[in-house]
Length: 149
Image (cartoon, rainbow, N blue to C red; front, side, top):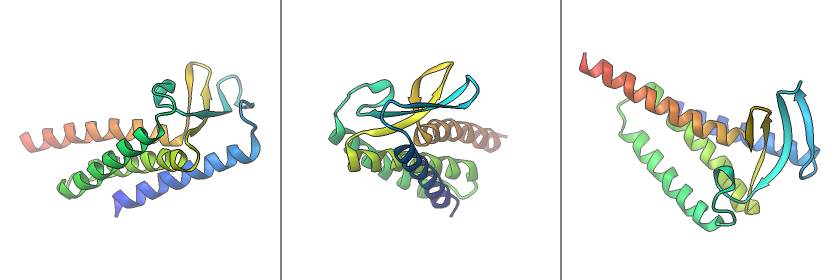
């Protein structure tokens, strides 16, 4: 339940935040959120991270569906004791699904989170994907240490 619950939570947060941006910001418009640190900037990204492989929508859709299937498969193969790994995979799946919905619906991903010290604009799904990968790797490392002791 942790896996599907976190996937759904991330997906909802991602899609609601993107809906908010679409309702309140024109493409390219920026608003300050926290001082000179955090801004919301409405960007339409037709590529992958940093805009690489722009307009390869079908490739991204197919790859995301394959990765999603692998995540679900692997989630059911992990022992139940790997609680953090299950959570990480749920977070990762939710992020992938959020960007997949954008690509299917519009052909691009809606990005909006802009930090002054980090040039790329990103979204909640992107954060979930990165956090999910990091948490998954850490959880496997922790579980491996527990098994070997």
